[in-house]
Length: 236
Image (tube, rainbow, N blue to C red; front, side, top):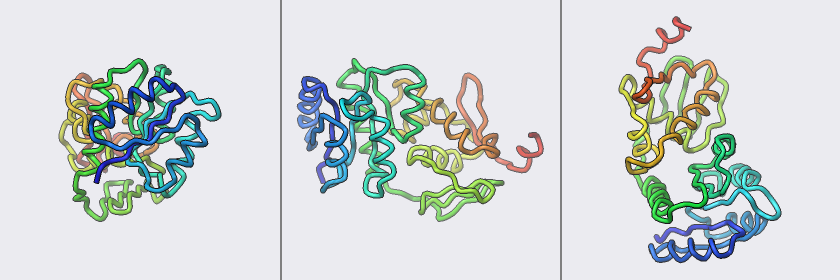
């Protein structure tokens, strides 16, 4: 089925350019120039396969729109790529915190934007081979239900944070470079900026709380999920 992409931005010239490029790739597009129209379009039929979302809109902020989309059962798993001129680190952190899957700053290369969209769409097509449930120390993961608990307290992870944690768990004791995580979790080709990985790992650790030390940082290399939960907790 041909993917449908919803473009949410009030810069009409930019929207026309992006829309032309997406349709040239063979994708269907829908357009919204304000937040309320975006929410109506996103929750209508058919549900878009991906949303390009600007942070600065005339009636609502992109972060508020993202929160509403993530709280709606119909759109909670739709990938959201924030496209914005706001490039401060705090803006990226907030964007990922409210549930964005990726973050592209203006002005951007259309080729890079297309690569990121293709990577996300490929990831959606990838068959899932998850185990029903996995336990590690204080951590319990229900792969099929996309649920995570630490000490019996359920965590609220974004879809991307869940994929990142599942990848770490499936590769305990093995070093994961940032490029490898970009490729395997995000679906990006090597060479794209890797600070997105660090931001997501930071947010994931914060949510894991007492289980955060299960993820080790290897300076200059990447990350590694520990193999022995008991040793980790004894060392804390």
